[in-house]
Image (cartoon, rainbow, N blue to C red; front, side):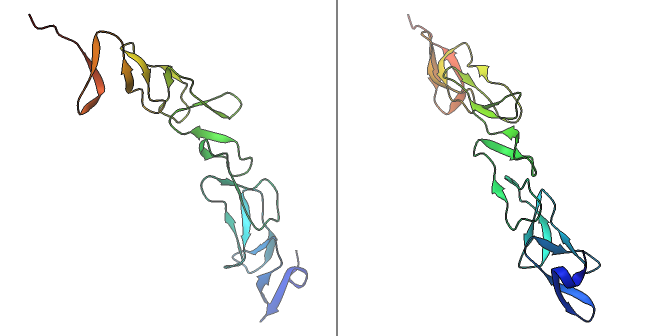
Length: 151
């Protein structure tokens, strides 16, 4: 797009672009593409930050991705990875693990809690309560031990 339509001219170079446009290396104003936004501070099109997206061109802001997404596509906003405690589904969504299941996050599925657990933390699989015959070991929350009987 010509400089006279999209920005001010000083010494033949564009210095400021109209809203939704950014300066390139040659001092030309170009519309900001999806996945970017027009940064008014430096007059450039900038990539949306992590956990942000923009699906339209010529925008001055990015949108926040779903709070359950650890990372998302910077154009569509669809989840790429999930936080721990959430399962990555086939349609790029993150669904919370139901009671009795956990997920370490990323693109993993929810897995059953370890057999010795009645229930576990959704984010780690660490037992919150143990099956009969097992107990939580102090300062070792990752494992449970069989209860030994003293005669």
